Amino acid sequence: MRKFLKEESGATAIEYGMIAAATGMALMGVMPSIGEALQPIFTSLAAGFGS
Image (cartoon, rainbow, N blue to C red; front, side, top):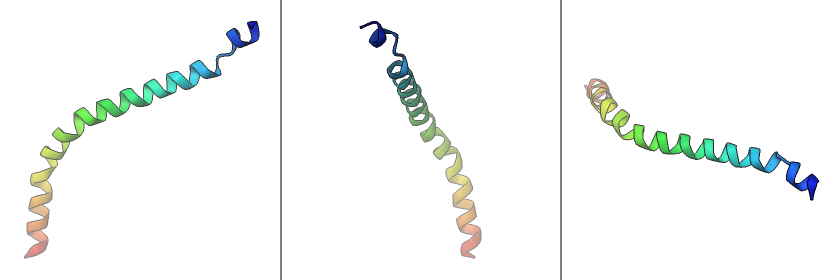
């Protein structure tokens, strides 16, 4: 039982999972605004290549 309580590899995996989830949530919040900011740039580039 003591060996089980001292084992920390599971806690480390949970911590990495929480970091990955928090990073994903932050990206989901930021990506729409980045897409809106880049849309005019890509539109002007597409218009320039079309002519």
